[in-house]
Image 1 (tube, helix red, strand yellow):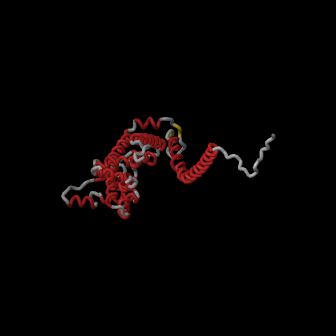
Image 2: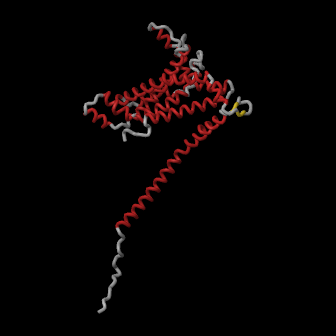
Amino acid sequence: MTTTKVIDSNAKPPSRSLAYRLRFELSELRHSFSTRRRAETLTGLLLVLPALIGFLIFYAAPTLRAVEISFTDWNLLSAPRAVGWANYAKMMDDGHFWLGMKLSAYYVLLNIPLQTVLGLFLAVTMDRLTRSLFVKSVILLPYLLSNVLVAMMWVWLLNPMLGWVDFVIQQIGFSRQPFFAGPEQALMTVAAVNIWRHMGLIAMLFLAGLQNIPRYLYEAASLEGASEWQMFRRITLPLLRPVMVFVLVTSVTGSFQIFDTVAVATNGGPLDSTRVIVHYIVQNAFGFFRMGYASAMSVVLGLVMVAYTILQMQIMRANENDLA
């Protein structure tokens, strides 16, 4: 007896296996994610491109040119003459170069600790008491003024004969102070002026960091009986570490490049007490027309700043996030 197999034309074909469907869906998901990631990467590159072009034109290219000039003897009037490592060898025996580096380091030690502490204090005070836009504007105002204008203003205020500050000091019973005119006080006065100008910016940076710290951490610590100082030491300072790294790196490198205030207020005097390294570099380049030697000192200063930045970021673990 023969059996005939009847095929139903309306029957659905066998369904694909579950594993196959999962592989297909994962492949589609990966493709979609890859496409979106490429689009985001392209958008990011387009946004960064103007800054990158500016960096290459105004920073990278002049830096490479300075390295090239540092191996020459060039007075800006004749063609450069190659001298090899002679400028760097001369630097090692130049007492003025080492004095400039010493004064710059001393200025950093005068400027950075107090500037950072005052900026942090202002930030914590504003975070606790007020977030008024007017208060923020007043605190940030000195930074918005030019270095030259600030220096000229304080030269007038601190003038030993005509300045308002010395007049007030004399009225309360103290003797007049030389400030910019005194070899012992000149560099400290320059540091004080720049602390006044920059601490508002430092405060704004710290305030931005404080506002990113979750409030529930403080609430939990308060419920556990932690004091204000304990919360500041155990919560605020650790979570402000990324901002602290940025502040210290930018402040120290900026302080080593101090020039405007010195040029306007003291011009390196009195008795070379404020002839910091950048002032000495500019003097050699455009005063003595020793562009090759000035470029060599600039290269060394740049390498010192790069080494400091790497060391600072390693010490403070800049690539880690305590909040995470």
